[in-house]
Image (cartoon, rainbow over all chains, first blue to last red; front, side):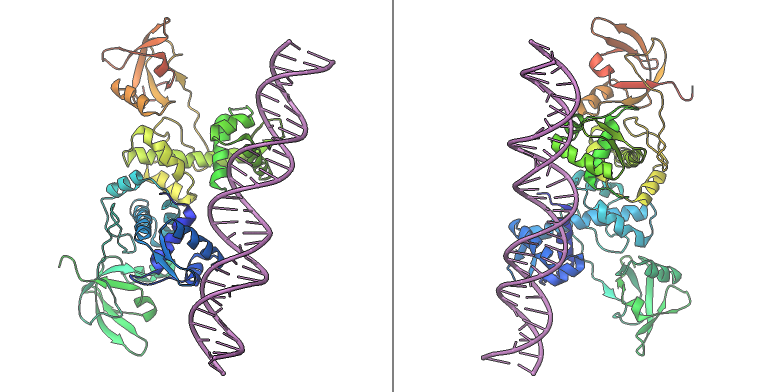
Length: 222
Length: 222
DNA sequence: AAATAAATTTAGATTTGTCTAAATAATATT
DNA sequence: AATATTATTTAGACAAATCTAAATTTATTT
């Protein structure tokens, strides 16, 4: 009922790769984890024996219900630590992931539940991803990429799918962060760039390269 | 320049076993770490190659200067996490050690230095043990066991050498904690128990079994 | 449908940290 | 001082997690 760091990394990666119904392939996972496909196969066998995986050889695989539960536990730990690092220790956005990667493997339920309480039961991490609760429940808020929303509708930034320092830099420059309310005023079909307006400020242009990582949701408290 | 969890555990244990000048033996270390002596010998060879250890076979061993530096880094992490768990997450005294044992192996200098700052640069952990600073400097405050202090001298509790729930219970019951100022009023040679007084409160008796774990120092700000 | 290419698995090796059993060195006892 | 006891080390094995190279299965092309 407790898993090695390596097993946890595999479980987490599989969770992220498999969508709602999808299967994952050996190559995908080996790319994700930067290991050789042969190593992946070895681990798949192990996880299958432990009943965390639905897997028949050559057929691809996905997490069992139990496996998904374990994955959500790991993700809970990861995201709570990210929140802690960002909120309390003032780590910048692009620094939290690497450290949380290590902290997430500290397994003490009490530690995590107390940390959750100390942080005030946050519902999303600094990148806008939802944090599963003690029971593994995870909010699936409806979100949509700003490249796909209708014009002239004010929405709230709730997720950024790229956490590099470069991305942080460009977003900061344009005063975009989690919770920012914005409106798409125009789409330029030539290069798929967008004209954005935040509140009463001067509208500005966002390239497609940036825009495709910015996701919004309907405003919570209008 | 980075060490495995296992290596770190050996280094830390050697640091604790060796006094100021002393040598450590294979058996002592194997008892401490609950491994077989043969495993200890294997690791000693490895740590010697890495120049962390002064070791000639059959002659005992102790940390090199470099080894001591590494040990102090690990102890710094351990004690800062203990402080965090106790102070911020409200873990009780006897619960912090086990969790800190895991957290101490998360190696990010930035994490630890920011944590230190966040906690307000604490100088001692919840058991009264000093926390090394960024440069590995550790305060060696003069302390003395209450079984050994002269009578009628008010001193301040600065260390408790036993962290079981039972110890916590008895100390709590007698209103003794880190920083408590107390005076030994009488020593009973029959059973080596002590009569203690805290402030103007009713004096009480402490058994030798408890007293030998309670250490005090001169009062800082008289 | 056969041939080719790509993905996956198997077989066997390697590293780290551990173990047991046997050999050797140091220490204690008669 | 010789012997017995204890401590330490060596030798060889094992489990976990990885790797390379070869074999096998599935998918794609002609």
